[in-house]
Length: 286
Image (tube, rainbow, N blue to C red):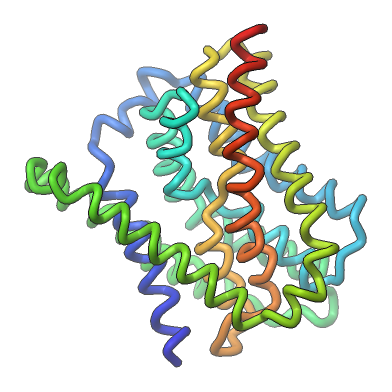
């Protein structure tokens, strides 16, 4: 019961922290830098799940873990992608915009994609997935907190500016705790499957970073925009992946479907942090 309450509340606060860092100007960038926004959104919403699916055709994972990988691929970029984009020298404004837009879009895309993935990878063992219930739940714990955070910031910008770092830190701590609890709850499964999950998740992460920056370059985006798109591709909202897995399983705890998201919540930083500086160097030379 504690996990059932704490996990959605943790995700809601993390999404509130995202909205708290937004202004209405962030959404106006859809019109001021449309090409970069469209490229970033399409890569995350379309290309990322396709690449994950292709990876699963190469790596032979147990059905539950394969389904978990797909659930993760449907999730938007994580809130920490904004920080990593800044460290890498990417376009922070674009990162914030992409994270916000794809997070809001996920309320519509994730429920339907989850139903498809359950049927494709779990087959007859797939639990009954209620698209409407998942959609409403996601709206309540993702879109509503983002909008609320945006309104709070708009109401008192000065207070928001002073408190933003503390809110962001609290969200980061909650993210770490959620991943830790997910791993602890499924520790035996994690130990048994890390040899299978590690290569596919880290390999997929590398591919996502490369596809992001190469696609951006081929489409004529600047180097900083390319770095942003690349990081947004590689850093996923693992907390949302764990939460959605719990909604699907309806077991009252954190199911095995959540293990890939929990593992990726760690490995994505191991790969992305050094990777983004390597890509920046290569991109600058090109």
